[in-house]
Length: 208
Length: 110
Image (cartoon, chains in turn blue, brown):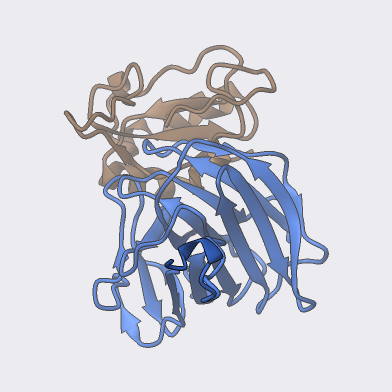
C-alpha cells in the first residue's frame, strides 16, 4: 500500500523534494514551496504529481488549506488524483469565484479541457484555513470529502471512467497580487486493496 | 463590464495535440471573454490592437451571440493584454459560456 505526504518544509522553486514531484508535460505549470505550497507562476494553471511511489488506481489525495482568499484576492487550491504524465486528471477545486463554501469536481483532459462533473458542491460552512479537502477514486467512483473540524464528511459521490491510472498530486491557480502559499500540507495513499492474510493455513493445503 | 483572459496555450506540432483553434495562424493562443457582450469584446480587441500587437488575422471574429473568442498571443502580448485591462482568469472561468453558442450548454475548446 503506497502512501506519501509533505508539509512543504523549506524553500524550492520548482517544488521537487528530491525528484518526488513532477510537472506533467503539457498544460500545467509547476508549484513552489516555502514552508507551504503555492504556484511557481501567477495566472497559470499549476499542478504537480507525486512520482516517488507507485500508487494503485484506487487512491486518495488530500490537502490542508493554509488560507482562503480575502478581499480582492483570487486563488484556488486543487486536489488531484489519477494525474497522468501528460496533463489528464480528476480534480476537486476550491472555487472562491463562485462562493466561499463551494467546491467543484472536474475531469481535465490531456489537452487541458476542464469538464465539471456534477453541480457545485456546497460545504457545511465557509472554507477556512485548516480545513481538509480530500478526493478519493475507487474504480470509476469519485468521492469528495471535507473535514471542517468534525472529521471527514462525504459531500459528493460521482462516477467517471475517463482515466483508469495515474498518480495523486495537488495544484492551484493564483491571480497577480494573490500569490500566496495556499496549502499547508498534502498526503496521499492507496485506498482499499485485498484483505490482509491472517496467517491461518487453509485446510485444503494440509499434506497427507 | 470586464474582459477575462486566460493563460496561453501552446500547440506542439506533432505531439498529437491537435487542438489549435480554427482561425489561429500561430502556435499559441488564449481565450478572451466579455462578461457583458460581443460589442465589449470587439471594442477591447480593436482599441488595444496597437498595444497588444496582435495581428488581426490572429483574432478570431466571435460569432453573433458569443461573448468569447480566441486570440493568438505570445507571452509578451498576453502580458500587454492584461496591462490594457484584461483580467487574468482560470480557463475554467472563461469556459462558463459556450463558444459561438448563447445556449446553456458550455462547449469548451482548449
